[in-house]
Image (cartoon, rainbow, N blue to C red; front, side, top):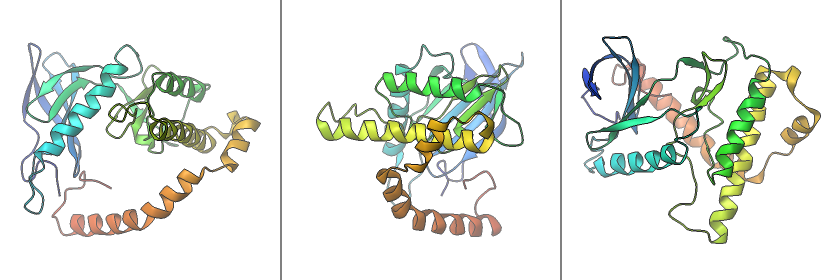
Length: 246
């Protein structure tokens, strides 16, 4: 099931002139493995390796190359934003290394400072003005509360900008729909973590769940229920490491 099969992330990584060592594996699921690296001076970096392992006899390294090419496209379009980590280079056929953002994912445990969500919504609107839908705002682990107190976005693996479909109307409609859903999910996080800052307009917006979200949940709910049960069984039997996936 793991992106690198029985192999692990490399124990050593050269970033520029710095030799780094693997500190820990952050995640290793079907599509990619992500690890945190540190050099002798204490600087930290993140390596993301796309899928290289075959699955059920089908070669899937092409998928790892495709996902890397696709994600780097978005990082390049947003490379001037201080709230998006910079890519520092490619690694092998499917990997790339980027800056490490000191911080922690959104959660009730860590608390959220005043006006954080105002900054986050402003950041996502900048991303939207670049013609991009982030798509993954429903996952709080992809939104970091930086040690600087500011929001940071990571993981653009499933983001969308219609780059390969051009400007014909179905692509433009889908982009607008996905961008609207980005904002909907951010407001949901705000309701959960900072309900005291929720505006009346945002409360109204949460009652108008889009048909796109309803259809998506209807179609994907059986898949995610089966996936959770399968991964739990694999973890319980030792065939999937705890960091494999949820």
